[in-house]
Image (cartoon, rainbow, N blue to C red; front, side):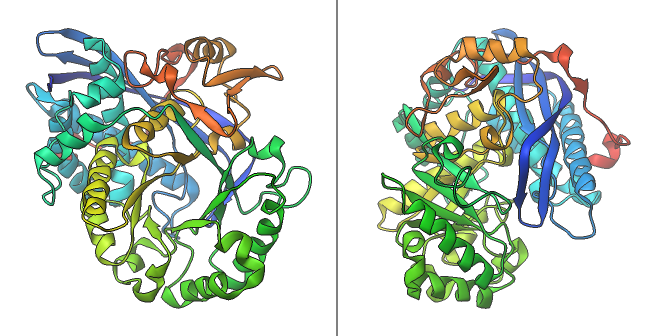
Length: 466
């Protein structure tokens, strides 16, 4: 049954994270970025108070790719999104369900951010992180794990933000879901990553035995096809079967350019090691072009949206354009993932092929990867892009005592290797057993004393933000 709660405090922290190798996607190369942490205190009606936490990278030039903004300015946008959301959530008086609070605040958040030129995808970042921390606190307060708590719908998820569904659709999905015990990793191959030989895509020391691969594209059909031929030649040497997805991160200018790539995939024999293993193509065109461009005959291939997923009606809109899937990312909102999974299940039951995919915006070891992994394991994502462990050296510069605490609390998810605590990958899979600890998929909270307060830009007065 749903519980009602009130938010008493929201605090933000951050920690710098240095990458072990450059990560190039779209038009940006990341060598380091801060990780944001959220700590909330809530009061649960009749049950007392509890503390909850969440974490996510402040990733530059993904939430907002507008060319006039520098990478650092887009990080500042995400900090401002958090700040605006904090004021809106704290201004909400009285007790409400966790989802009811989200539903009451998300519209005001989008409007307040628009007034300071923060677009919807970046605007949703603040509520997404606060919602995760609130859910963690609620689960801890009542002594429930994420999977049991969501099956009982303790957050009170309903259809008020998704008028194409009804409340029973959501309740049935949540009640019927069973935790996936294993989730396969999908290994990211960034634009600057090595392809051939030692350290290349088929090197098990690099890909951790992955059976799924996510290949980044740069938007030039000829260049991408040539690179995919090289990658396919390497993957064809694997001793086991594999599948691939392609991600253009909005780099294809229009349908004409996209059609040129798909025709190569359909007709070039050298591309068969990729084309025959291809599951779907992710967010090929810019989000504004996407909304104006029905896929038409291109829909013979499966496509999903990601950056274009900036509202609760994004999936129905994309479906009408010929897209069959949408990404789940906890940085875009856990409740939206649940609602989109419900849609995919309902539409598929009527004879369509619709699905929700697990994509990872460099979820770092610890809270970030655990909460995103649990979300996917709940909604049925059998394989998920996991790149935090690949581009960051284990827990990175996280204090050793904190990393050791996560290893002790989640011994199936982490292992000590080469003096570092790292993600433990078992035959290409992550195990989810230890995520059933009370709380949102974590037995451990970070060391708050070992990080800095969020680097805040000039505060926006509440009366201007709401």
